[in-house]
Amino acid sequence: MRDREVGMYCCGPTVYDYAHIGNLRTYIFEDVLRRALTCAGFKVKHVMNITDVGHLTSDADTGEDKIEIGAKREHKSAWEVAEFYTKNFFSDTEKLNIIRPEITPKATGTIPEQVELIKKIEKNGFTYRTEDGIYFDTSKLKDYGKLARLKKENLKAGARIEIVEGKKNPTDFALWKFSPHDQKRQMEWDSPWGIGFPGWHIECSAMSMKYLGETFDIHCGGIDHIPVHHTNEIAQSEAATGKEPVKYWVHGEFLVIGKEKMAKRAGSFTTLQSLIDEGIEPLAYRFFCLTAHYRSQLTFDINAVKSAQLGLLRMTDFMERLDEVKESVTKKDISKVMGKARDDFRKFIEDDLNTPKALAAISDFMREINAVMDRNALGREDARKMRDTMLDFDRVLGLRLGETGKENAPGEVQKLVSDRDKLRKEKKFKESDLIRNKIKELGWEVLDTPKGPKVKKI
Picture (tube, rainbow, N blue to C red):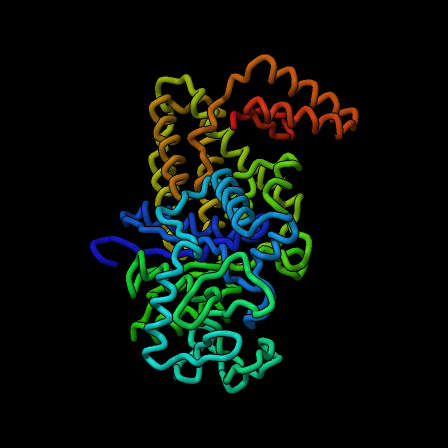
């Protein structure tokens, strides 16, 4: 880290379908990391790629390109599919208050850089050619697999990965794939080796080097990237430059349903929109993710997410209550309460982003201050300080606590909310959902709480 500047690269989405909430959990933890570094006084240069070509259905460099599959499924061009799901992804991250990375390059926009990187790897003697493409020879790298602690001699073709004709070693991977002889791909480019497209792994090395240099500070992603994608990134980057590419690797654990991770290939997955349709505010899902450490598996349960929404509501109610304090003087010394809360929060966040303990510290803080307000013993000036303290916490948590003041919804919206509540009590949920949509079209969102429906400006 130079002059308190941090280069951070995060593996972005493969834009062939909607992002599911398991994917989004990873981007939430990365956002918390970025926010925590910023609050600690670092200037973060955040790069995240968009994979819009080259990610095949198998880690063994076999199968179809996922973007091409999406194009066939939706009877659109691969470019149209990639553009649509890229926009949808950023719409989801905006709803979750994830700060957009400063730089978001596309794989299709950096083909020349990827070709040049492959040429360097080839010049250094780490590649070979098959009928299928240009492959990286992992036997040439003595410490291949060090990130995942892989032992190459224990890896057999057909076990970790499938057999690909012409591959010398089961761990070898494609740097450049040739287009099939019997068909024309929608996405293909000329290269020194022939017409084709880049492998999935090479894009991240090329883009991270382009924007952050040959060695940078932090590389993030999901834990599933460790054994193949990130292992191969390290191999090809070191083969090209002779340098260690990344100082710190940071990985997030899975969101699981039962014992299985949520994944698109399973055929069914939960999107952020489906949670919204269930009456869950996107930031409630963010809160839910913060209740578990990013390196721990988190079990998805709709009731648990609804409980998280109540936890978020307690915070917003607390902020509103602070805004309504009318007493002029505080009748109890609360400086120690505020100081302890700040110290505890900072300690837990600095302890590998321990957000569950940080939330617990905030809960203790709110309970003590609520007790003071119950006795009308909190003055306006100290209420403002308490609110500022919560906003400081929120600079890391990203729950938009500063936007939770009571909204004066237009009469039309208030009537629709009342009509919807009546229909729900009559168990006419289909009709009530139609009214929810009307409210949304007017720019408002309904939150169902134990105290009744609340409405919030979108």
